[in-house]
Image 1 (cartoon, rainbow, N blue to C red):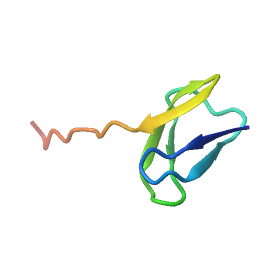
Image 2: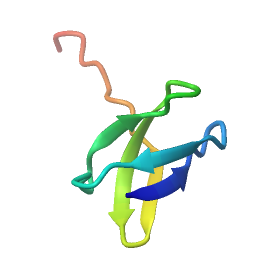
Image 3: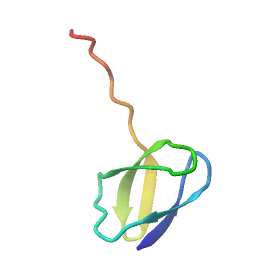
Image 4: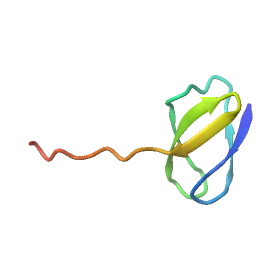
Amino acid sequence: MSIVTCPECAAEIMLEDGTQVGEIIVCSDCGVDLEVTALDPAAIQLAPMEQEDWGE
């Protein structure tokens, strides 16, 4: 288990064993979506926002 810091609100987030790079997690304090970018050492960043195509 690793501990990382939310880049949005600075809350500490525990990454469970079995977490994988590319996984999207949610900060329990501020609710922002975060992407796991590395595991050793553990790192996260704000998840990219998906663009809506609105049926185009």
